[in-house]
Amino acid sequence: MASWSGILSHTNIPLLAECDVLVAGAGSAGCCAALAARETGRCSVVLIERYGFAGGTSTQMLDTFYGFFTPGDQPRKVVGEVPDRVLDRLDAAGAVFLRSNTYGAGTGVNYNPERLKLIWDELLATAGVRVLLHAVLVDVEMADGLIRGAVIWTKRGFFRIAAKRFIDASGDADLCHLAGISYEKAGEREPAQTLTTTFRMSSVNLDAYESAGGKKMLMQRMSDAVDKGTHPLPRKAGSLHRMNAKGCISTVAVRVAAVDATDFEQLTAAEMEGRRQAFVYEEFFRDCVPGFSEANIIGLSHQIGVRETRRVHGEYRLTREDCLSVARFDDKVLLCGAPIEDHRQGRSGEEETVWGYIPGNDAYDVPYRTLVPRGRDELWVVGRCFSATHEAHASCRSMAQTMAMGQAAGMATALSLDKNCGARRIPVVELQDRLRRTGAILETPTRVAETATQAWQRNRVADS
Image (cartoon, rainbow, N blue to C red; front, top):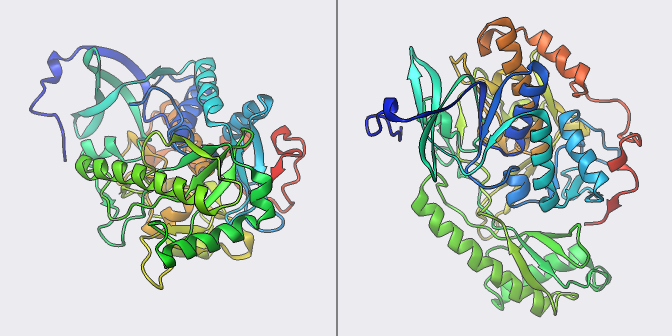
């Protein structure tokens, strides 16, 4: 455990705030958790974030939400309520469209990530969440075996925040790590999933690209470039798609492997390698792909994209068997139909990304217990640090699911305060009732997702 305890005397650190709920990390999961806690129980909520904007992966590196729909020719919508409000705001700004099903992952919801930064701000401010940006979590305060507060570092120095309940939405389980809570670290058993620096290009002639064969043509030319040694690409596959900006595309192509993303020195090297690879791709696209002769990189992801680091040991661990058997749980709080998507290093003759599809284009239940660290009553985990095995995590880390996790955990904190009970003892049936009443989806719809009442879903399909 890497902690400042014993180095800093907490008694000498000023108290900045006291609140009902402290959320560590303002990614999609953390934002939804903060909103749900604040709106459901009128709890006082503080949300801390080390960057200067909210959204995490949704605004730092990606521009498409996956997991809202089951895959297949007749997609069914499996996530709702707070996540829908985000999409409604994007639609009202003309900043969202649906991407057709790719790689069997289901329909993607493409958006403008810069607009999304503003939308997260607006939703949090309207709800009355106290947001602290540029605030880095460095320690926790413990008493009687429970977390009682957190220590943050800011440009003004160190501050303490006291809280009654905590939600770790840090992605890397930083709060749990500081509190000495057990977890499995990616790479300890199976190889950790690879890292990706996404990049965006402008001045792309998408009509010329599609006329030349689009995705199928791109895959062939990538493979040829690697086989012939004309361009030192890190892999034979990769993807690009149009953006919410005319003549612009975004990519998931860079691949950096064998990195412990909790080690700052390894992460430093990975960041540099990701940037190097991005410009190798730029040269390849210009030289080899129709429609890209005048294209340029106009932006790199805010940081390299990390798929997994620490996965907390919860009251229950979601498994590959749960996903592929379409498991049902009495304490379900969300659904997932996203396939297992395991990004690997890739060697000669080996698949680079290994897929495992949910049978029948169905959706499995995700139990509440995966959000509760083992033996804890004051703490929940949401996002990619929730309790799952490597392969189950590779399915349920889609952003729509992490938003649904945040929503469920936020409501659970409010309920635990209402009932004066710990995370393990809340009445889950009542939590499920609250989720359903607000519009969350806990049963796989039998109807196709043709809910034209949702404005963002109407007439917004675009080929990737």
